[in-house]
Image 1: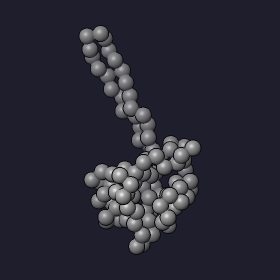
Image 2 (image 1 turned 30 degrees about the vertical axis):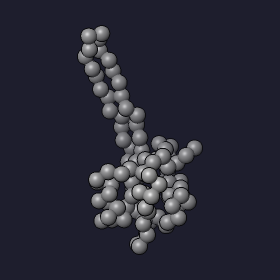
Image 3 (image 1 turned 60 degrees about the horizontal axis):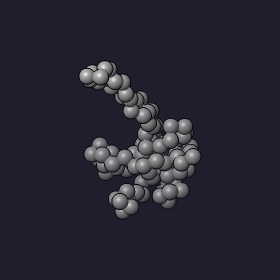
Image 4 (image 1 turned 60 degrees about the vertical axis):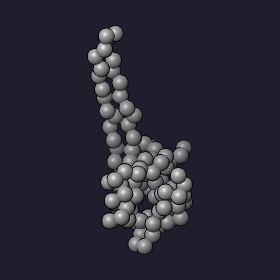
Length: 96
C-alpha cells in the first residue's frame, strides 16, 4: 500500500508552502496521520510538525444525450497538508 500518491502543485498549495512551510499531497484514502507523517519523513528526509487531512467527496455529473441519460462520477480522494519544522523545505520541482 503506497501512502503518498503525488504532490499537489496548484497556486494555493504553492502559496501555502511559501507562507506557512506547508505542502499538500494526495494520499491513500485509508492512511492515517501517523502513517502520512512517517511516509513524508522517509521520502523527503525532513521533520514534520503537523499533518492535516481532507476527505474530498466524488463529483457526480449527469449528461442528457441523444441516446439517453448518462451518469458518472469522479473518484473520492484524500488530501494531506503537511507542515514542516522551521527552516526545512521540500523541493517538489526537481523530479519533474
